[in-house]
Image (cartoon, rainbow, N blue to C red; front, side, top):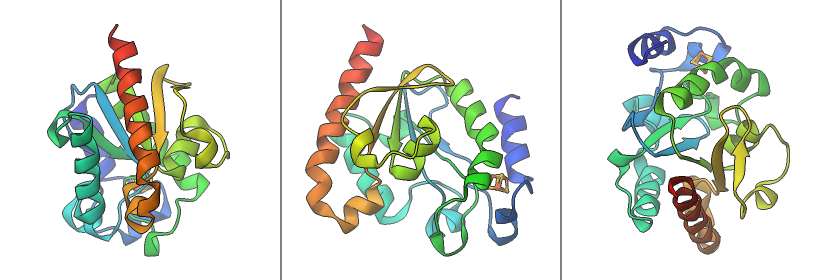
Length: 186
Ligand code: SF4
């Protein structure tokens, strides 16, 4: 599937129950030739309303995090595990993540980034097929099994807004991700 076909499939998707509660699907945004792919959990209320991932306060913090490693939002590609908003922002169910995965998988193939940065527990656990806690997953460079792409895990910006004391660890993760990029380019 090329980008246009994929985007149409997502916009029309009724594979899981979440389609019933969405305002619109949230496909992804950014450079389709990016070296960096940023993957979060699922759309929230503002994303569902605007059709773009990581808007609002969490989006602003993500932009600042990217800026800290010399990146502008337009230079990366941003997507989520789920394309539709779960009710009351609950965690995605395993079957929802499974049904939505082929879309993200194809986005990863099309972008072919050099590094994936997973934001938060849900993204990390789904991409790494593990139930380990995020505290055990961050701090090292993983390989995303299906794509073979290096992957670094850090906290979700929404969590960092609630828990600013963890920002120092997120900064360490971003520096690690930058090292992973340097290694991928060397
Ligand atoms: S969450 Fe994914 S699988 Fe479920 S309806 Fe939306 S696009 Fe389809």
